[in-house]
Length: 279
Ligand code: HPA
Image (cartoon, rainbow, N blue to C red):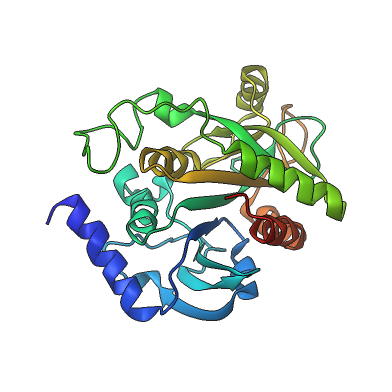
């Protein structure tokens, strides 16, 4: 079976289960899966029942595709994602994005738990991605490497406008209306799974990263390759440690705990964007 047949087989399996036709895809990062509970008339499809779909092995990722309605839009929400550090290939990590496209979805909204690099950011803050730096992509781990399938997208992808301007404007407007603090900045994508050393944090700050995390950038590249509109938002779950001998250490538990503060804020932004969706 070629790649495209695999995407189609997964999409057909999902279509057999859900009566609704989603137009917006949502990817919910570490600890953020609870957002899918907001969907009405929902169908839950466990990743294990979708052929080819990668399982997340990480705590805080429920592993379901939830299709339902939110603010008048039909959404397909991924509760958790697979990461490169789990040993998946980038083709596997981005398989769900290709399936979303195959399902007829035109917009993908990605979320992630991230470390705060910008000194102005605090735990619980949200940051809208206006751009990213893909460290793996720059050193040879780009999901678009390999033979290009012209049916899926073009060989040389322009990414100067990866993060949809109108969706960003809409999110900022919603944030202002509801009094939710929302930064705009640059997400620095790394492979993980180790968190960063203080020297790496200082390097990331010099290079222009505002948040740091282990996901999202590959999915954005594939979504743009497929011609989908993209919006993405980081939830700051911890403040990156930039000095040695600080007695602090980053851990996954604090990431999950902070996610609980982030979910209601993210829900407000997301609902507002869906309600005022710029077509
Ligand atoms: N670094 C990388 N990934 C992360 C972090 C971090 O500090 N927090 C949540 N995901």
